[in-house]
Length: 184
Image (cartoon, rainbow, N blue to C red; front, side):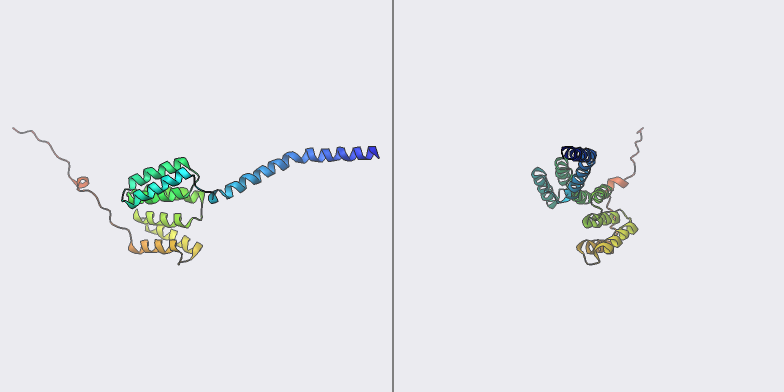
């Protein structure tokens, strides 16, 4: 009996040793993928939350550059919080920096490909740059994802209906170069 029991223990040890490393690796992969999947559900860092509130207050006060500064600081504190990119994009649009806004919306979409607010905001920024067809493509994507009556699709549809707005330029931008002549 002792020999049979010893054989079973040896066989059990061999099985454990053979599968322990792959089992540990698999559990690590599952733990990491689970944490990535729930990253969007995590709470924002409290320091970043304060900076986000400062940015929103600055934006409401008509100070988009101060809002951008606050949002960028919040992003430095909590780079994993995707909604900061949406706030940055909105502030950039209000500052007239549609290209920068589009980059922020695309970063949000890289992180969350089905983020309706990012798709809608990117479409509005594209329209503001004059890319009407690309904005319409974003609207079609939104309508496919959430229908025509979701708030994001309605908002982008309204922006597209208004059409691209003419850009205002400063008079100094179109002033002819001054010529200096020598008086006799």
